[in-house]
Amino acid sequence: SSRQGKQRFGTIRGDVPNPAAPPPGCRFHTRCPVAQPLCRTTPPPLRRLGACHDVACHFAEDIRARGLFNPAERSPDAT
Image 1 (cartoon, one colour):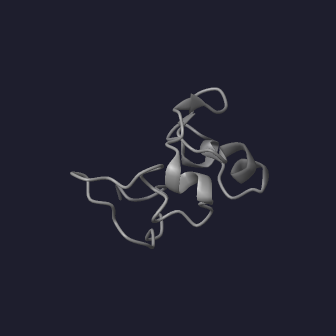
Image 2: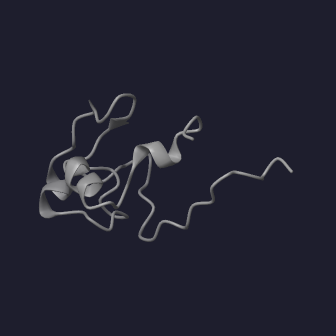
Image 3: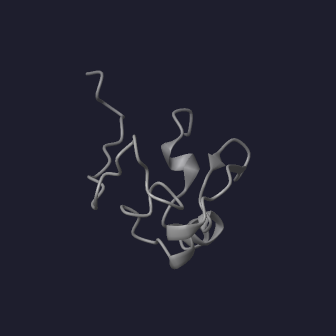
């Protein structure tokens, strides 16, 4: 089956932002479980995290360190 070996992701809770009028700050703060006050006011810069993963999150290193997200787990060529 073409679905075999593919990872399913859960539903993201929260309000979907209007793409025509995105919220101030990080566009995902209305749906992010780790959003902080900074996220509501300041857009995070796009930057490199790891060898081949770009992120736009003020707290990406903290999230990764706490084991909440590992980019290699979602990489299509991860073994």
